[in-house]
Structures are given as structure tokens and as C-alpha cells.
Image 1 (cartoon, rainbow, N blue to C red):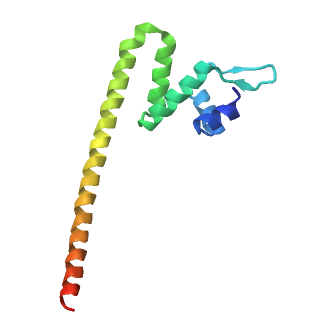
Image 2 (image 1 turned 60 degrees about the vertical axis):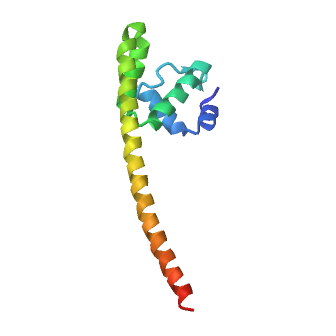
Image 3 (image 1 turned 90 degrees about the vertical axis):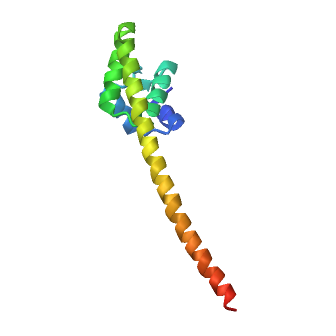
Amino acid sequence: MKISEVSKKYDISIDTLRYYEKAGLLPNIKKNSSGIREYTDMDCERVEFIKCMRSAGMPVERLSKYIALCEQGEETAEERRSMLIQQRAELIEKRDTIQRSIDKLDYKINIYYNTLRAKENCLHKTK
């Protein structure tokens, strides 16, 4: 699959894919005799994983370390697992912070709703 096809499939810009390659996130992208990148199914799976981890808030530097550990093989499995557990914990904390903000917004919105409803009821009573 060519870089433009990968870009469209995963909704990632070509520049971002090239950046990921330079950052070591996509270290083994093959090029044909014309120098055009050819992504394999395994490369595409990695792009999907990278996109997921970036959405989860994992910084490129940490993700680069994770990918480098993957390249080293099974002996790094526990360290990689720990990195994923840490990222999950950070994401859960962020989710909880967002939920507290949503709850506060709901509370404030309900105050306005109840105040406006009370004023509206008051207007109907004066007629």
C-alpha cells in the first residue's frame, strides 16, 4: 500500500506518516526501486496502533521507546506491558477529570434551566 493510501485509510496526513517514520515509530518501511514507500499489512497494523496510542495521549517519545522495545523482542515484554499500564492509568485519570468537569457543567446548566423555568412560570402566573 502506498503512503497516500495509508494516509486516506487511517486519516493521517502524509507528513505525519513521514514524521512517524523519522521518529522511529515506523522504522522498517520498505521503498521500491523508485523510492516510493510500500506499506505492508504489518506496517498498517502498526499505524493503527500508533494512532490509537496517540489518541490515548501517549507522547511520541514514549511511543518511540515502546516501538524500540518491540524491535528488541520478547525479553522486553514486561517493560512494554508496564508502559501500557502506565498509559492506561493516565487515560483513566484524564477520563475522571473530564467526567468531573461534565458533572460541574451539568450542575450549572441545571441551575440556569431551573432559574429560567421559574421566571417563565412567574410570567404565566401574572397574566
